[in-house]
Image 1: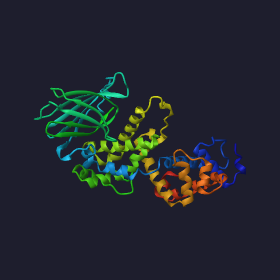
Image 2 (image 1 turned 60 degrees about the horizontal axis):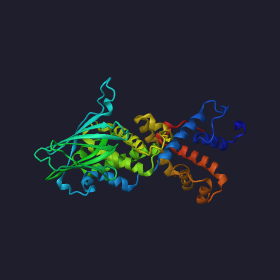
Image 3 (image 1 turned 90 degrees about the vertical axis):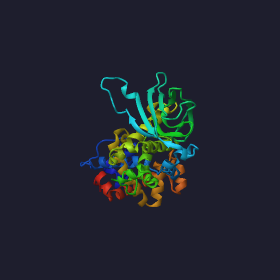
Image 4 (image 1 turned 135 degrees about the vertical axis):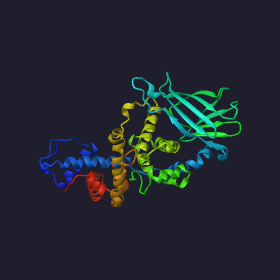
Length: 201
Length: 196
């Protein structure tokens, strides 16, 4: 335990830094600190150390990737963006909590639309694997045929393709995906629809 | 709008410009909030690769949902909530052999959006004060607190050309200088106590 009386100003501050960084545990109250200033300084130093630990700007390349998104979502997936419609979110049941209905908050529905195409997704937690969710999709393709419609799921963060499925004749499909955020690409006969950043889980 | 994330001003009208397809407005928005979004996965102790994944994904979700955000003033809190949710998703996806018990988010990360916004103001003030510190102090504090993993004292001493035994007292002097610089700023004065 340090002897507060014998410490000079520099040593006292060094002691406070040790306390703030966890290198020392608090000792007996400092008799010279009747106003609690030392305690406040330790608190302030802790905040500063926290700020230093999380400091650092994101890489410029990260900022550029994120900031070029509206124009580049399709090109990131290697598509001709002229032929790709970007679907917009129009419905999200998350946040609608049914009182007394256990589990209601973990199953939710998302609805997206673009140019006569409506995409309805039901996201259900997997019964067997807590890291996955089942997605039951119904895609109303409007005037387009539902034959040979391929749906691809790409990880939003790096565009890796993680799953591919075909719509059945009724416009339905079911896939199981790890929890995450995905860009969903729907390849219709004459055009494609991109649903960016679909949150699963 | 206050400046929770960046140095440049961000006006709520920018959101409408983004929705109208203005790519420059979108870039301004991303640059403004980049420090805020970037700091959150770091508070959760995620790896640099995971931090970048969370960063990209959070802005992708924002882009998708921009049209549903009723009040642009709520954007910082919305981003904090969304980014935090991505952090937890990332943690859940990690190898099951990594116990959730070893993950130690900072206290402000657990305290919610309001606490994180205050922390962001402090982060900004600390970053500005660091820029005013002399180079030797700045290098020492960076090596001690922002480098992962933290180098050993012997490595720090060799890199900075100082004696190992002087690192402790120098660290205290540098933090004191940082505290004094912070205290001279409006943000610092509001979050720091008076001291001699």
